[in-house]
Image (cartoon, rainbow, N blue to C red; front, side, top):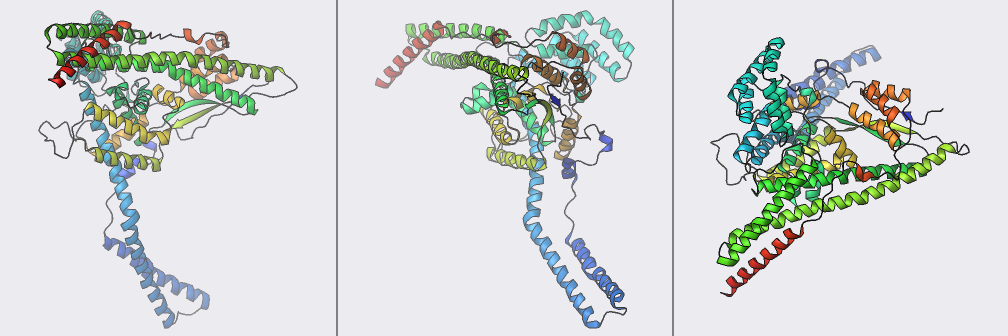
Length: 634
């Protein structure tokens, strides 16, 4: 049977060079660039080149050509030529320094300034996110950040474990585990790991219900497992979608402060030279089949984003409810399922609605506490708005599901027709290509210049790590609103260069590991941050194995292309996909029918807002209006 698709890999030959084997990179050259040479050195260079060197060349050439020494008049000519050449050279150098030279210096300074500022803003946003947390939540959240640092010392590990568990004995054991791990005494380390295994499992089970990521970090530390820089850090799902939607709808509450942190990390690693790879299926052949495939890919991406948008809206809702202190114990930990977020949001909205009702009854009876009622009314109004956003996202998911079914049906109809009709003699040519998301040297400078201009205009306070630093009248403290404005501006700046609005780009970025900033600390110099940032960005593994396995699954499920041994070997050798996993997919995966219900894949059903929420809000508005009118007339 002839092959139904061809395979192509677009990859540079030098991807696997070790750090020791490479020359200085572009960013390192910028960071280490020497100061401009003195004018005295420049004059001597021109004088030597245009003077003795030119005369020597003229005398030698004349003697070779005519067999005699050059006459005095011609010697004077070349001396005059040398003087004019020196003058023109100095003038050109001066004009270059006045125009392009200044621009180069300005670009270099802007780049280093942005590299210096972004990590500081990330730490400020991270600290700002804890402002509205209860003390217990802040303690656990801070300890989770510590446990994910790669260069954590034994005392830090002990502090973090004690903050999470409240168990000083377990904290001491965690410190010993880290000490023996660093010393390479792994058998002794395993003795202690075995000794605390029951406590480890108990605390892990208690914590994973509300803080699954922190629970995994705690378990890893207590079993002697520490992440490596090449593994990177997992990104927050759907953070790009939330930021773009918040910008488009002019509703900053649709994004979280963690989303702000994520987009700043992405910007920092792209400026530092990060290259994010992803796999794409392309078709070359008949235009009608190509058009059908493009439509299928478009609808698949829209459906995926629609399903993701439901979770994204629930995440924004629960984060907002937690930040306004409606219910301090509402779950907002990273990694929670949509069902848990929906349950927590519904329960909190019920409580908030009850609080509004009680405040309304108290105001109606006593004629007091109008301000307290108005605060609760505004909270309920905003919460219902955010809940309705989640419900609308759920409805759109259903519409996009129907569109995907139609596109899938049309593609399968055409592809089956061409495959079974011998007269057409048309082969489907599906190409697997490796794409990359990166900024080249010029675009890095452009992004840095635009960011530096924005940061200067925003006048955000710097060096927050200095407790004794005073806020200049011209500077502004970082608030939640300003932090979200920074995120929107960064996304707006990056979008023309890496196409953040493209669902495929969003999925590729969010499925990749982020560079770890664990080694970058507040107060480091800009050049140190530039060197560390580029090293950390380059150290993250380009792991496309999961993407290759998902792509293999889609080849069968959507395109009805069987996995041949050649295809499996290509994916294993090129992208390090798991051989057993691909063989399992080839044997058991079946093509998806257009009649298949796409809604039963991990359903996230968000019902309409409850009537009693709307009724309590309506009644509270009536009371507020009544007392507002009475105040005006009086």
